Image 1 (tube, rainbow, N blue to C red):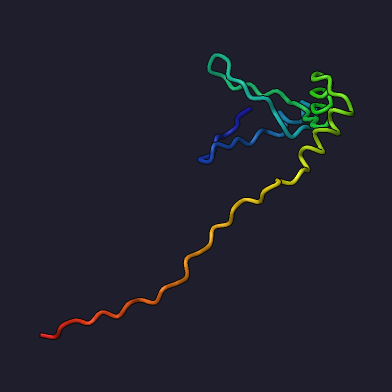
Image 2: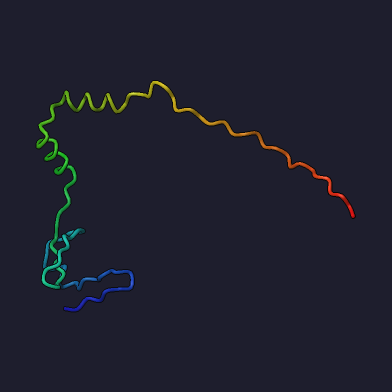
Length: 97
């Protein structure tokens, strides 16, 4: 099978190649010995978050504390800089020669 690389670095994969693997939007891309290897992957963002939380052994109380911390307002508001008032251009008198 043949695929063409466009000027925008995009490949259109032949239908026969994509039909041979399960339907997916994302591929893991690797290079091996001068060849590009595409491996279909299923992105499961929610599962990844749950796995990370389990890895960190965070309790419900830890998460609640983090949410409360993130929602705190800053005690002192950030100073706002005042704009200088616009000045009118000065009229300069030129000596006429």
